[in-house]
Length: 535
Image 1 (tube, one colour):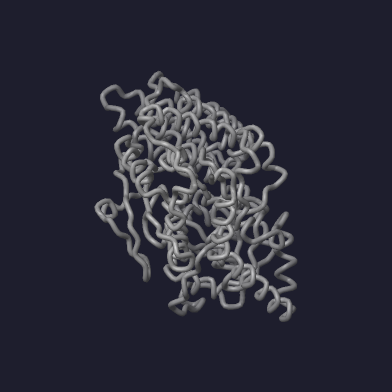
Image 2: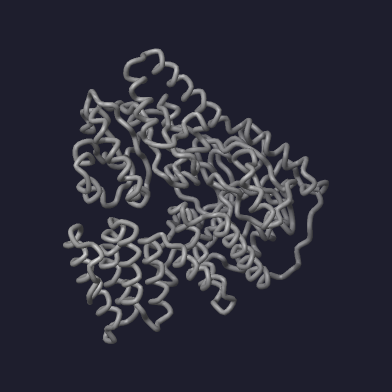
């Protein structure tokens, strides 16, 4: 198969390699002697290599090669077609491939469980690649959520009545989440923090329900899918222990959405008559259905308007002018919005580390980059800017921590990345790691909010472009337009001890505000109980 010659002097070897891999993938897809599952398994490794080559190309070349690839991968099998579209979406970030995934998920001819599976795949891809989630995509995703919820509600008997405020118990809160793992998992830690404050400081009795709606199995072939973790031991437990508290809990079966399980939860809510249902994370169909019985207040785990049909939407922040478009398109009235603050808990530092322990240079200004999806978040564009910045600042070093698939290939792409970066792996004591660093650098991404707060707690400035959770948590003081602003900051930080001291104080002060969960929850509950949607 010929890929033509869009690039003559650069990348010729990689394009030849790409052509060979593509030929092999096409041969596998057209091999009638093997079944669908084997075709997916055999192609997946080839697609990963094709993906790595595609993302290394300039935009024009990538577009041309992607078009050739799409033609080569043409198939009459709808499942293989979906697999190919999701691969091209991951590699090119072209919204036309996202549109095709949406068309399948939106179709009422597609079985419910497959629509639900694709819903979560689309959610993940828009989370990882914020470029894919403009106002139109946000609106479309909310419509998809509403459509799937409507589909699900038709399967559930309409036998539950609204319980007015005066007949509900103001001391009881039912908290529903989509996933319950361990304290090292950000959303789980968020849930546990809120339960701790609700019980110990606000004197509420909390019932925790893990609706476990995220897919735990591959129901359709999707490249780089979301397959959620599920802890079986929680399924049979009736009580959950966290630090010095215990609270009743229930974990749904991993085959959710399951009509029988949802009815069981609705019956529980109706019997216990809580003040309200607190849905942590959003995107929760079980919690949304509870809105027919009691108010549902939904707080997302990302800095955006929660995706929910519940009565109240709890925002991390004040409404922005840019929010008005989506509110109007989705017909979300202003009185459903509660402006709040998303808060975190900070683990205590338990160990001591030195730079020598992690192979970090003693005299350099060390920037921390922390995350569990760094291989996806370090995009070619951001990497190019970082490399040029390091070339111009040989005294700056970047320490990556967390999970970074493909780090070795990443560092070999530029000389400066080989000289001035290191991957130190997953750090159990993240505060000990931050104590070795001088600043926190945020890639362009949606998540990362907790990591930034931990860095602020250790007195580190947080450098972030004005997008995503980190930008919201850090505040406008730390927003940057380009790497030149980081360079200016470092020059002053290096030569002005008073400036260093003051910046550390300001960072710690910001972290203190972002860890005051008691005040944030008290204010939120006051807003919930005074809302006309609470009655």
